[in-house]
Length: 603
Ligand code: AGP
View 1: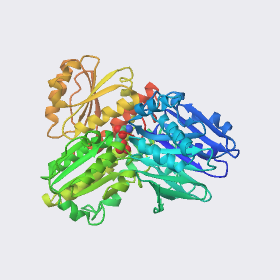
View 2: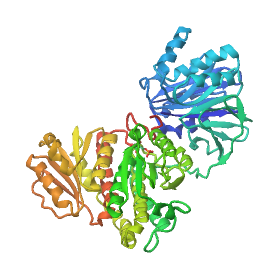
View 3: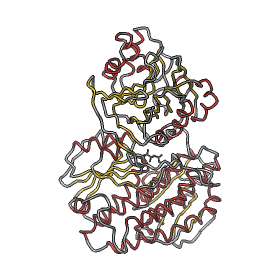
View 4: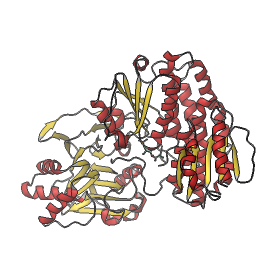
């Protein structure tokens, strides 16, 4: 999984390639590189490990490059070391690749037999040698791309330059996204729209099995060897750059942004005592009235949001829901009953597992497909029949925060809309929604206490998170946040499950974090906590319930009272702050945790 950017131009593109690549860093930051051709047709390539900024000092050697391709890597095959950084070269040919070549071992041995020497451990390097081998036979790049892609199994978005083709980029894709930007006297390739927006808003989406030849003045698209014409779309995305606005990290900024986002979503979609009509798109109130089942599919944080939605919907309607992680959904037999809605949830809209699940769903007998997404013009939104854009603004931090609460808010709106025919509860639920905006401020006031508590996690290697009902997905999400950015192992359990095994882990060193809104389940959760305290575990309880602090091994984080319906949206915020402060104490790279990428574009 990686990011690709390229510019076909007659002017110097060195800085633009670097700046554009920076906007794709969310796709991976294990290493990066740029290849470009000089006016003299000489090929120059630079590479660096770690974040893209490490390329900066090497940029001078690219002074005269005009047309170039750039890459930021998230390692799949081969360690995150310099020799595995893209671009990969085969004499006068240079390529960048996003995806996974599943048959690279057999291709590699075939190419080795033909005398090709491999410099990296990647799957991608076979592409450069294959193109080279085919080009040597035909001296024609178009046919070489066709014969090369025919041999590749797996997924790919490829950008390629050949010094024999002045100022030309060749691009092809299958299963990995690639767009072509149409500029003035220069054209672009990119994994998403972001790197090209400062130059153009006009773009073409390259679809599976298509390839393109791009020069500064012309974009030609082919399917096999047939030239095809494709619609040029215009992006509506605002080019405003995300900045830290005084916060030390994007994660902290995004945790704080939740307040204004939820307020904005309330004013956009919620009336005095009802949800506005057709907020999921024209005619959707009628469509949603006709649903008997829902299949939610998502990954990571977005999957946790779907677990809350399942509980909400099943609580207030007779609709049955399943929530499945996308990496499993794709490989399972799925029974689709009549009147089933498929709902995919994704911040980025570029998560490969979720995209391929939606592609599978589109072939099954769903009555409709709805994508809940934060990024307009993403692959998921292009494929889904119905789309709800959350408009939470760019989420830069790898650890998702504001996308999660926006997803929960959206799913709460969905719950209310589809529960209409099941009773007269809309106005009461709407009242609860308005309470989010009243209560949310008090959560940020907890930050000073949370900061103090975070010290107690700093030297821990393991933690346990507990919840019951809709607080269980919150425990899962809080545990994921802690793991991602502080590298402390965290497991989440239904509080009632503790006694069935995990309790064996509890001793006087084990921190146990519990989310305990004062509701009908609180009594049971308290019994589970008593079992932890009896084994001298350290408990950290987020609650609005009055509970006696029996000893100093019990920490109570006093939450504001709130209706049970909105508790998941509110309880996750202090948990996000907790993981943030633990990570600060551990001095990790909060916004770019090791081994991860913002958007996981490989399966
Ligand atoms: C969340 O903090 C993660 N970085 C990750 O689990 C993420 O939620 C997951 O990869 C799904 O991403 P998406 O919402 O963009 O599809």
